[in-house]
Length: 195
Image 1: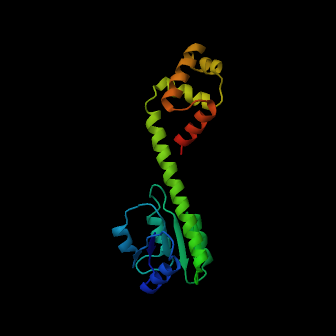
Image 2: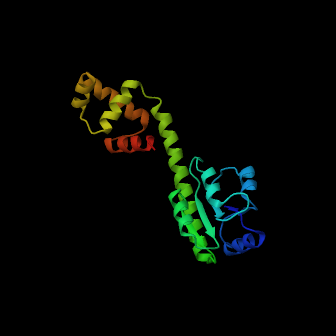
Image 3: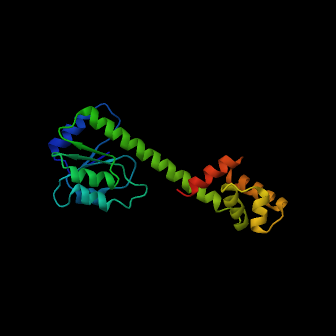
């Protein structure tokens, strides 16, 4: 977990609230230090809304292109509704107003870490799907896409001007290469591919 912008006292306070959890906390005094050292590893980022050199909202915007997107939780010492709305619309998972209870902080971080894990898993699955899809011939790809759209073999044959038996062969080869064994799995595979 990365904690950005909190002073030493706040970092110690947050560390105390998370005592007993499995989170390793890396503190950064300001956004510039964070940007210089951040490695985009798993976890989440807890941002103070108001920081020197750059606001939490500005830092969030700079981090917006990270792949997968970073799980961000904001903490603020004043209830700033427009900033909270802006942060959430830009993808922040939570916006906590100080004083924050240990339970609320743990819950927000647990959700952010779970979201980060899910995003990383989905990204890895999508990359594996792309690698397997790349092994298909162009005709196998066409057949898969049309099958995924719900067309029957005879409709695919008519669409691609092929014999129905040829469509069956392409479809069978493609499904074997993709590691799917029925139409429902093929559709899920294609959805994962498009993520």
